[in-house]
Image 1: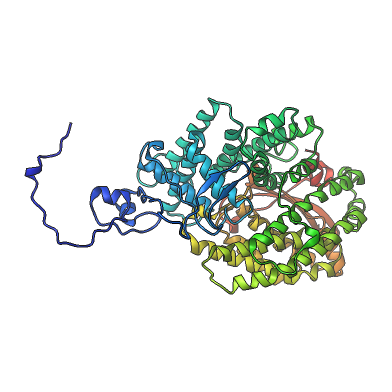
Image 2: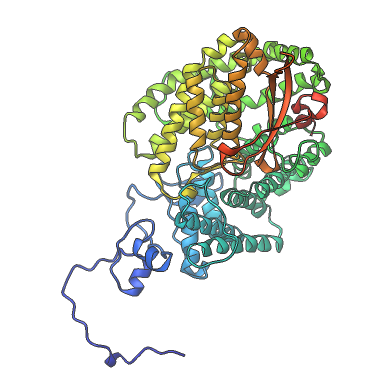
Length: 610
């Protein structure tokens, strides 16, 4: 055993009298060296030791405009401070095995305070509920530390963006050690969960493990967690004794259940187009799909069940002339957004009764699209939605413009941009009748352009706010998907090109979407557009584009694409099917023609029936 040398053997050091600084990081204080006090981690420690133990958080003696306190009460999880404040948890060292574990947990907290996750809905789920529960629960805390270790690995990696990162294959020294510590924490959280039955652990762990696998780019495993998370939600909403289990979830269980459902339900819709294997040979979400069949439910009826969970009580029939703040707008926007779920069952009924799912006749398929776009029920719903959206727009724009002209570094600035993007996402992309007529879609060009411009502002602001690639993660933002939709449907070539290049440089992960695959498909669509515009009237060209279909296989790494192409020998427009792998350099992608599966039946027949 080594012992310290006798005190008298040390040379006596003399220091000049200076003002003593007590705000350095934990490690520099222990080592009694000068700390550069960089936040959130000291650069001296990062350079010399690879990690920093962080800073001691001292409780405030008065109630300043600072970090909010987290608290449970009998009604809801809430904060005692304004929503713009940042969360800091006073970590008890007894709950962590060492300073590294504490640093990992703080990295997790920093992530959920980041510009992407926290800007979507359920800010309190990410900012308050999950950190608070993880702080006091060993199973969830271990999963949170795994996420934090991944964040530290990303921050110290050489890749610069989340999409460019590659996981190390072998344990090594330096920053890669954090990656393998993350995997160890992940596995340990699963072991802890298997030792006890807890609905709260199962529900919250489903979100944390989904976050972990998405953060390390493992879409196959992320699909598995979406599958199990949705199956759990289905059971909690439909089982005979579900109320007994739900009651143990939290003091206000349905509020937490709604927040978790709002994470998983958008991913469920993504998973319809992102398959674990090949189309026709695998169910998109097997456990969830079997559960739906056993309960005689559909995806759309499940969404309707989720929409009945308690939400904002704002009366959308009484939208004010002007909103005073973003919280007020968001209360109304949540109500309008979830009203949109009622259109799903209507469209599914129309599709299933049309007979189009079993047809490969071009005339039948074209007639189906015309009937769908002209359907009276859909048109009535969309007309009512447009009235609501226009009332929201009039009340929101003065507030939005005021915020945009203020401090670009503020969280309110980022939040306003994201809320505007969400609004435009519904107003532009979920108005089915607009796709009937080429003139109608042309009239939306200014809105498409605004969406691309705001997306660029959001991406730039996020990069400016955090240099950690891990903070480019989103499970609910859906930004890359909307950019792809602009590149696919907008009729202005310049706006399509701008959206295409935004996709090429998109830095992060966006739910289950492989953003590189979205870019490759949008790039192929550029060729389709160029061939299509060479013949026919604008309306004939638009009708040919209706036949485009795609699906992402092998977890998003393989793309299947259908479209009408002109046969060079016969001069006829024929439906063709191509596939490609999306790994590697996008410039070297090779699309391979293959026979039409299902004798040319619409691909949506397989996706909806499964």
